[in-house]
Amino acid sequence: MRCVLIVVLLLLAGCASVPRQTQNACAIFEQRDGFFDNWRRAAYSAEREYGVPVPVLMATIYTESGFRHNARPPRTYLLGFIPWKRQSTALGFSQALDGTWKRYKRETGRWAAKRTDFSDAIRFIAWYHSQSNRTNGIALNDTYRLYIAYYHGHAGYQRGNWSSTAKAGAKRAANMAAKYSHQLKTCGSW
Image (cartoon, rainbow, N blue to C red; front, side, top):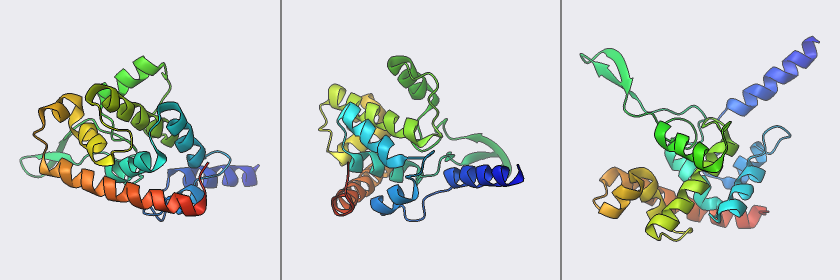
């Protein structure tokens, strides 16, 4: 009984850790392709469902959370030293906001989806990028513009006054998507 408990705890601990090589898509998938935790399968399933290429999806997660399942924005401080509220409700791999996550669950019927679950988060990102395609006409392989719409929302994208933070993130995401795309050709994709 004790051995079973240790094995379960080790499996759970492995699920919560950040992949060691987040700039290498092949290494990420190799590390996360276990029986309970198959990131490759989840990523290609999201690609098939929504048409957004895996490198774009993975680059969005890389830029948003660095593959940390419990990522949150930093807290603000009251009087300069008392931890206070967070800057936004963003949470998890996708850094989805509460309202957007609720909308996703309502529109897709995925009521049990969690932002801290990779499979749910990558499917959310694919769904959101496909919404950007329909709403703003952004090509599903245009990582830069998809990220801008992801960061500022669809209405913010349409206004066109994009922040320097969003543009820097979009450039980082686009560069990483190109890198992931090249890597996935060498290690094999589904």
